[in-house]
Length: 194
Image 1 (cartoon, rainbow, N blue to C red):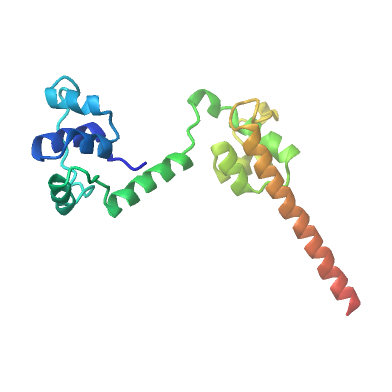
Image 2: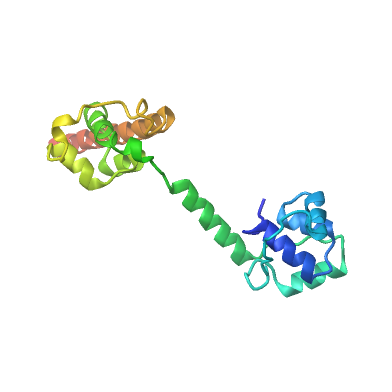
C-alpha cells in the first residue's frame, strides 16, 4: 500500500490545514484512526513538525478539495510520489550492508567460490558477496595484501550470503555454462559437416 514518506508529519499538516475527516487522514497516512485522533488532541507525535504534502508533491490541492467536499472519498498519492517511493524501495532491496567484522571474511569467501563454483563470473561474485572486481582479481591472482592468510571458507557459513542466494546464482551460472558448451559443440559439428 502506498503511503506518504513521513506519515505522522503529513497527518499533522492535514489535521491543521484541511477539513478532511480523521478517517480519510488515517487511511491516507496508513495510521490507525485512534492515532490520528491522538495527534489532533496533541497526545501523539509531540514535537513533530507538519509537512505539507501538496508542496512535497504527494497530493494535489484539487485532490484535497475534492475529498474535503465528499467524506466518502479517499486521498491517493500522486504519480510522482509513487515513483519516488518505488525508487526508494528498489534502492533498499539492492543495498547490501556487511558489518565491519564480517568484511575481513570476504577474501576467504571469494577464494572458496573461485575454487568450488568456477562457473560464477565476477559480476555474480560481486553481487553475491558484496565486493569489488579489484578484490576478486587480487584473490584470484594471489596479489591480495593479505594473500598468505586467505583460506577458502564457505560464504554461507560466514553469513555473507544465504544458501538460497548461492544455489540460485550457481544454478543459473551452471545452466549458462552448459548452454555455452552445447552451442560450441553444435558450432564445431556444423563446421565439420561443411
